[in-house]
Length: 252
Image (tube, rainbow, N blue to C red; front, side, top):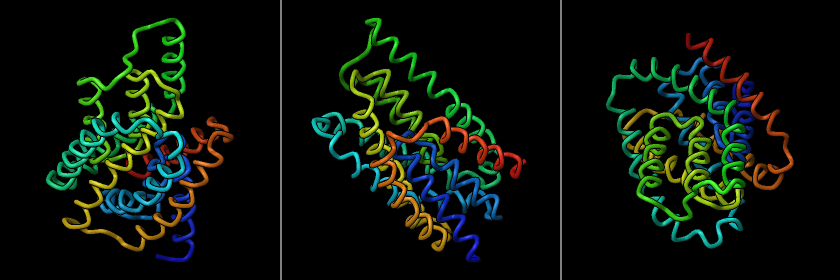
C-alpha cells in the first residue's frame, strides 16, 4: 500500500464513518475506493466490513442519548440483525467468489437507487403519519423479519443497509427520526460486528486496509454524530452517487 493509497483510503473511511452515522450507505464510498485502487472485490468487501466496525461503534456511541428508552426494542431487534448477518456473511463465504463479482454490480446499482430515493421515502412516511395513517408503535413479527432480511443483505454486502433499516423502522415504529437513526446505528453495528468476526476466522483479510479504514471511520463516526444534522444531505448523496457510479464503471 503506497502512501497516496493509504491517504485516499483514510479519507474514504472518514467519509464513510460520517455518512453511516447520519444515514447509512458509507460503504458506497470505501468499497468503490478500494476497487478503484485495484483490490479484488471479495477482499475489498471483507476488509471494508471489518474496518467499518469501529466507525459503527463510534457512531452508535455518539447517538447514545437518543437510545434512551429503547432497550426493550433493541432487545428484540438486535438478535434478528445478528441472525441475518450470520446468514448473509455465510452466503458470501460459501458461494463462489465469481458470484459475488457479478452480484455486487447489481447490489451497488440497487444501493444507489436507495440513496437517491431515500428522501422521497422519508417524506412519504412523514406525510402518512401527519395524515393519521396506520403506523405500528411497537416491535411486530413483520418488523423483526424485515430487520433480519436487512441483516442478510448487510452481512453479504452492506452498502446502503442503513437506508434499508431506516425505511423499515420508519414504517413500523412511530418515533422521532433521530431516535430511529440511533436504533439503526446499533443494528448496523450488530450486523457489521457479526460478519467481521466470521470473516476474521474464515477468510483472507488485508489488515493494512482494515487499520486505515478503522481509523478513518472512527473519526468520521464522531464527526457524523456531532455535526451530521448540519450537513447538507444533498451534498452527501451526490458524493455517494458519483463514487458508486465510478465503481460500477470499473467493475463493468
